[in-house]
Length: 137
Image 1: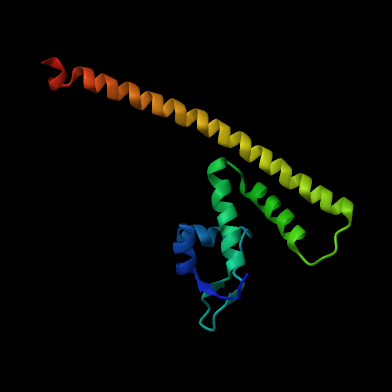
Image 2: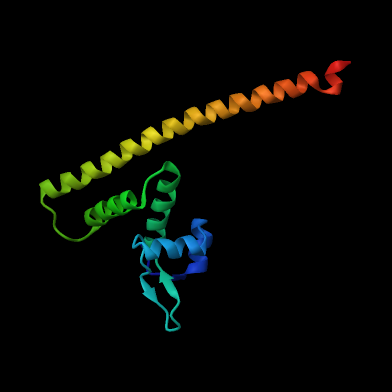
């Protein structure tokens, strides 16, 4: 990724996360700004934005901060320049597979909830149509 550095406001706009949320993720150690400006402003890179996007996608699926930290650790280690033996690489890949499976299960639960919500909204719409003044004529 490139070396462009962004202040927190730009990162918030790009990720659709609030400044407060980004600072919270910093406090919990999930995302650490890559640098600070001479004035002390947090500076983020594209890599930092990518981490925030992973977190943003995990949150609505019910993953905990610890799970987010674990997944980011696994991906960081896989993406690092450190040499991993085949056993270490496979352990990390298995951790990621576990999160992929958990995400797929949550997505399916959300699909069921969405279908139920759409059915409920349709039921209400039909009731309104049956009982509207125009239907009474």
